[in-house]
Length: 160
Length: 431
Image (cartoon, rainbow over all chains, first blue to last red; front, side):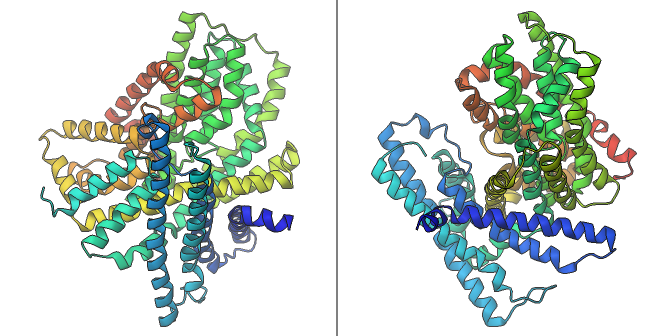
C-alpha cells in the first residue's frame, strides 16, 4: 500500500527520471561503440528522439504538479488574494483545455497511423508506439491539473 | 486591423494570457490552437507539429547538458572551483565578488542555463560575501547578473535553440560565444572592482603556493569538462548531443569515484530534476513552435518583417531597433520563446540586411541574457532574491551598474563582428 501510494504520487518522476537515464546511457554506448568498434548503431538515434517525446510529456506532468512552468507573475502578484485564487483556478482550466484539444487531435493521429500501418524509418516499429506518448501524457497532465484545482479550491492558498 | 483579422487576435490573446500568469508555453500553444480552430486552417496538424517540435536530434543535447549541469552541482564541484579561484583573485579589492564573476563564467561552461547557475552558486557565494562584509544586495546582484550572462559561454541551451531555428551549426555558435562571454565577464569584473574599491570591500589574504596547488588539484576535474565538450565538438569527434552525453558520464565518473559525492539516491534525484527542467524548456520549445507556425500561416510573420524593414533606410537604425525590441521582449519573456516568436520575423530581415547569422546569434543571445537579468521580470534576479531572501527592488538597484556594463559589452559585440567571428574562423569552423 505504501509503495502504491508513493508510485501514484511520483509516477511521472519515476518514469521520466528512468527514461532520461536510459536515453543518456544508450547515447553514450553509441559514442563508445563508434570509437571502439567503428560501429554506430543506426536505430539508436531514432529510439532516442522518440523516447524524448515521452520524456517531455512525463516531465511536463511532473512540472505541472509543482507548478514549475515558466510564467510572468508580475501583474497578478499585485492583485488581492481572493482574485489571485480565482485566476489560478482559471489558468488551470485554460491549461486543461489546451491539453484536452491536444489529446483529441493526437488520438486522431494515433488512429490514423494504426489504420495506415505507418512504421518508423530505421527500426520499422509501428509509429503509434511513439506518438501514443502524446495522448497518454495529456491524460496525466489533465489529472494533475484537476488535482491542483481541487487543492486550490479547498486550501484556497494563492500560492501556486 | 479589422475585427476579422487573425493576426490581430493572435497578438491580443498572447499578450493578455501571458500578462494573466498563464504559463508562457500554454499561452503560445493555446493561441495557436484557438486561431487555427476559429479560422479553420491546419488544426488537424496540431498534434503532428507538437510531436515534431520535440522529436529533433539537435534538441536532444538539452536534457544531456542539463543533466551534466545537475551532476556537477550535486557533485559539489562548485565549492572546489570557488576555492581555487578565490585563492587566485581574492586579494584584490572586492576579490570575492570578482572571484564570483569568474566562477560564474566558468560554471557557464559546465551548465547551459542561467537560473540553474544562480541557484548552484548563489547558495555558497552570497553567504560567503556577506560574511566578508559585502552588502547583501550587491553580493546577490553580482552573482545573479554574472550567472545570467554566462549563458553566452558554451554549452548553452540558447545557442542550441538558435542553431536549430536558423540552421547555423551549433558547434560554431558554441565557439563564437567564447570571446564575447569572457569580454562580458571582464566588463563586469571592472565595474565590480571599482564599486568594491569605493565602498572599501577588502580582499582576502594571500594564499600559499601549496594551498593554491591543492585547490587546483581539487578543481581540475571540473575545469576539464569544458575542454572535453569543446575539444570533442571542435575536433569533429562528437556532435554537440554526443558531447553532452559524454559530459554526463564524465561528471558521473568524477562524482562517484573522485569526489565520492554521488550515490544511487543522488543519481535518482539528479535524473528527476534534469527531466523536469528539460520538460519545462521543451514544452516552451514545442508550443512556441506551434505559435510561430500559425503566425506564419496567417501572415503575421511577413507583416512584422515588412514593418521592421520599412522603419528606416539606414541599416544601423534597423539593427538598433531590432535590438531594442529583443531586449524588451527578453525582459518580459524567457529566451526560448523569444527565439521562436521573433526569429521567423528576423530571418528575412537578416537576409536582406546581409547580417551574418553566426554573429547575429551571439548578439541576440547576449541581448536576451541581459533581458533575463533586467527588471521587471528578470528570472535570474528572481532566483537570486529567493536564495538571499532580499527584495527584488533592493537587488535590482544594485544590479543596475552591472547591467550597464553588460550593455556596453553588447554594443561592442554588435559593433565589431570580429569579436564573435574571429575564433570560429581561426579554427576553420566558419568561412
